[in-house]
Amino acid sequence: MLDIYLGNFALSTISAKLPEAYAIFDPIVDVMPIIPLLFFLLAFVWQASVGFR
Image 1: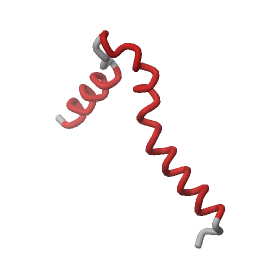
Image 2: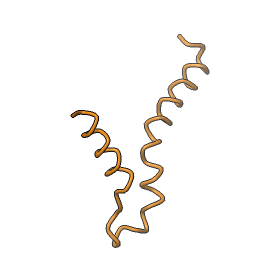
Image 3: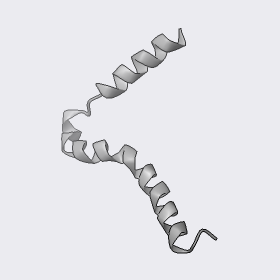
Image 4: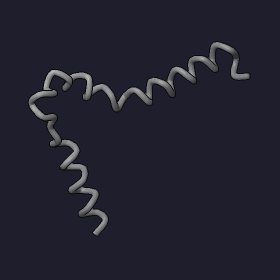
């Protein structure tokens, strides 16, 4: 049952479209999920620069 739910959820998120009024923001919305990973990498680079104190 859970597998069916997760499968439907994955399909609905992949095929989700913004309304036409917001179509100009499509490129920004495509990049937004990557932003938390960039903060994680920034924290790693910061710690590497200070010697992992």
